[in-house]
Length: 289
Image (tube, rainbow, N blue to C red; front, side, top):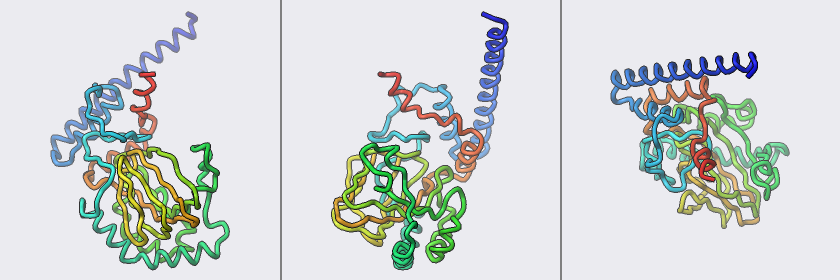
């Protein structure tokens, strides 16, 4: 081993020890925070960090069938594929706000989708699904990274006004409000999305026959002017077997059970510690191969 190799080895050991010390300090601080605010559920955040740091044995963890988030699994929070509007007050408020004003949203969509040739941007679907073309699945972004887009404010002022009253309910990690367009005859294969701290809401804008979405083991149909709520960390797939485009408005909402302190801690994770958000489940699958 050369002197350079020895130096790099020593530096690696020092960094490893430093990281271990920082992790211990962080966990102690979280324990103190949980003691001071027992109803804040900080213990869930602490357990999740220990999970990603490899400090707890999850072999006997009661994994939920079909659930495998791409980025971040938050432990000990209630999770299920489908949610009903009456499950949480937040869902009632969101659903009421959207369904009450759905005609304004549909009218703006109809006007702009007819007049704007380049309204819909491609999802670059082929990079994720080899069987699909880039323009099979399109989108128009209304809200991203904490702000309404300039084009949304210009083209969809009424829709922006409707959605602005729901800002407090958006997900802290995966914020998005977007029109989603699925071309006729297209089916999006089964997949999982980012995290179970996010609940996805769909509002039916233009729904032809023979369109549906499966989440977990249950399939449901969209209805124009009505909402659906589901956890996108569960396996899901969608299809449009009609001869028309299917259009929905998608909102990524914060899981209603997260406390204010948990949301704050998750924002810190997003801003400063994205490198430790590893897909533990993928790693576990790889180790079994």
